[in-house]
Length: 385
Image 1 (cartoon, rainbow, N blue to C red):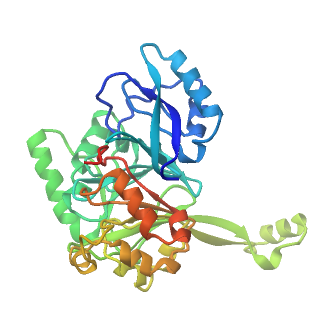
Image 2 (spheres, rainbow, N blue to C red):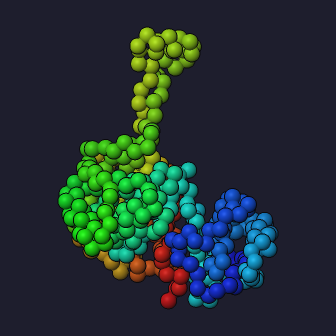
């Protein structure tokens, strides 16, 4: 809804706002669940977080007012802000040249996902309920508490935070993490951690688990992770998390429970394993992964977390391919292949501002595809210049 004016409350505390990936401002209080449902959080010295789908909700201002009344030392005032664009995770608002935005941890297709991803700088995506992190980026603090790490490739913006994650878990007395990674980079990763140990003086305790497409890792009960092929200048792979459940065999449906029990006690297999693709994470890749045989479930996963580095014509499709990245034109070309319920777009080039990302997605994606896409904006410039 470009151009719509909304009368909103703006925080007038310190000019410097916290890092977008910090949890330090998230002070617990009795209204947290109400605020999370409303899609907002006000931290001391921070900017507003607002959910685009609730901007017109008449209860929004009263909720903000109740919140500010309990927060000592926090001053709020009304401001006229222009709505530039919105998505299910947050809304971009501007007053003059200033862009105000901050995304909450997202819930997409019923799956909680958090993190930060800026091309060439850092990519770290968390699935908190699964205790799983894809790549470590610069290792935001909350990534430390995930017990399993899935590394897609060895570029530093994806693996650079691994020593910090491993070391910090040790200092906190947490169990050593399991680090799943492409077979081709296991030796190099081991050497990196050994070098850090020599410099730091503390052991880098972790399990390095090599895994390649065709293999699998049994994660939490009821979940299995399988790598899939991606295409990047260095050895790489994506990861597909499956929900794995035992279900009654179709031919037994409708039978009385006692009959099914008796058959089971007699040694008959009455259930079968059913797997459903839950979350797919591409890491860095060109569009070649879309058509690769064996990657069909990636495009059927409930949630696809996919890189989309280039969004305009300043970079050609050929250039994007040569560096092993996605271009929006190729995303559009294959739009009908994406059967996912939701798509989280990540790894945009740092050349874009948050507002420009939203604008380009709105302009260039077909409406049906745009409706299921959410851009991860954390870490991008708040200014339009």
